[in-house]
Length: 295
Image (cartoon, rainbow, N blue to C red; front, side, top):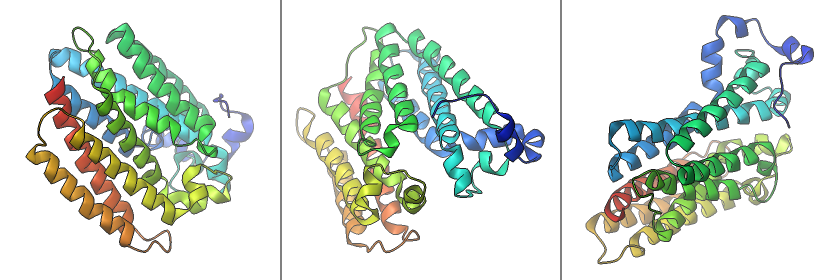
């Protein structure tokens, strides 16, 4: 689906509240929680590696924030017709809190800002981050409905620590094991992220890999992917395993067991979802600590 300006028929579906609360609706349409998580992870990585000072770090974080906004708005605009068919009252484009043309314009503007800020971090860093954002847009516009739905997550998350380090003086690449761990973590996040919406997705024609596997198998895959990420972070660095590494692995194994052993019978089975998110959080913290140590 292409992003386009508001048509007369689209405007007819919008509620009057779109003109009353345009900013609130637009903010809700950007997927604020995932955007904040990825931007926060980037800020933690930038602080951990240092080397650029406050202005340089702010530029890196700003580029990622703009990219995340563009991805969220692109996603809601691309899914608008399916969300309307499913009567998703949690979606601003369904409730009329904002208009399709406004969301499309915001997505394109945020993408332009993202490219400018990314390139300002350095040509190689800019290309790397732009590639990651492009992969996310590719997911929104096509791949989320295919068995390759996991691929953009793997690529974009693997490139995130590379963008942070390439923006440093000298532009060093992070170790391959660090990028692999980030990619595994991102792929696991994909399987976790779709768990609450699998039934809705299947009804509206979205057949990504998690939807094809089903909720129970997706929980297992997500848990195993983030466990694999933890193991890579444990054995990847040179030297003995740190106490933090063993602690993260212990937490990961316990939460992984909780996620895998808990039956997943319906959409309200939240414990496996929360357990896998806990693994991802511990994994992300370990990723930040190791990035600071190896760069």
